Length: 112
Image (cartoon, rainbow, N blue to C red; front, side, top):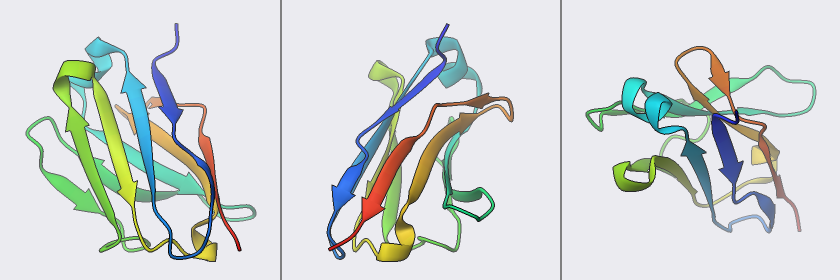
């Protein structure tokens, strides 16, 4: 059973925007805080943003000020709106929940 499914990645020019989505199994969505991580080639996976069940948010330093995490309880989905993208934002972006569940990742490539 697939627990977390990301979508929305793609190729975007520097300065552009993308919105990622993560559809979660309802029991996971209702139980855990959820977050977005990213991993660039040759680098460690890093936290981008987290949102709790009470809609508290936390942003990691790498993209703070350029991203917004949100959630839609009716659809058991979280989102990551990314703006002012830079070449160095190129990475695979992962949805994560409960310290156990990971999505398959969605590739974001920022390039001119």
